[in-house]
Amino acid sequence: MNNKKHTENAFFANKEEGKKLIAVELAPPVNADDEKLLDAARFLKTLGVDALTFPDSPSGRTRVDSVLMAVKVSRETGMCVMPHICCRDKNAIAMQSVFLGAYINDIRNFLIITGDPVPTAARQTIKPVFNFDSVGLMNIARDMNGESFKESPLVYGGAINQGRKNLDVEINRVKKKMEAGAEFFMTQPVFTSDAAQRVRRIKQETGARILCGIMPLISRRNAVFMRDEIAGVDVSDEIIERYPENAGREEGEAVGAAIAVEIVKETKAFADGYYFSFPFHRVYLLEQILKML
Image (cartoon, rainbow, N blue to C red; front, side, top):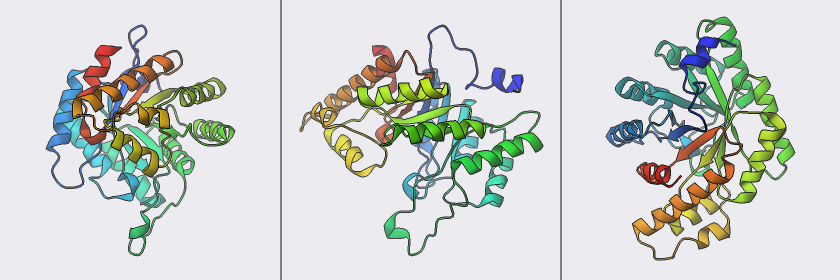
């Protein structure tokens, strides 16, 4: 292991006793207006957030390139940034170019994922690549660390889907990713005690460094949409019922923040940190959550 990588990178910096690492996802814009994202990044810096992550055109819908977004946010805020890299849109040649381009712009952290499929309605004109899955791309990153990036290797991690029906399959996937060089993992959002315990089991059986996914849903409608439309996110009926049908904005946000606090407390004993994603860029909810802990 490269000691410099661990002492200068937020994912390996020593935290105060009992303090968890906090990463926050900011979805790049669907157009050329990045002011809301930059304002959110500056605000999160004031809260002491350790790292900002940027998804790679999630759900197969075009957004600003995750690496270029990370470069700009890093330049303007000085924060630790981590673009997501998915396998949907680029072949091995293009992927290696992405890593090289990111590297010369001082981007060292990545979340490597297989990626969402192209939406059905767009498949007539848009063809996915999927030259390999996340493990295959991690192997490419590992090889480049040994060849091109020896002095300051890339730090990359993977995703965990704790909601997979056969949890043993997911545990084996985590182990394969670790063998391919993954040094941390981010879970799908956790909403229930059952999901939290599944993450605990993955931690126990793999020893992986895990950031528990936290998504403060902001209304009953938001919760129902996540349950019905977003693959891999398990929102129980009990969670939905906690949101009043005709709640106002503040009331809905208060329920989401309370659930987030409950999950943080339940996973505190085994989670290495938390990976927050906020619907509609409502990052100000993080301040409320931190005050409640």
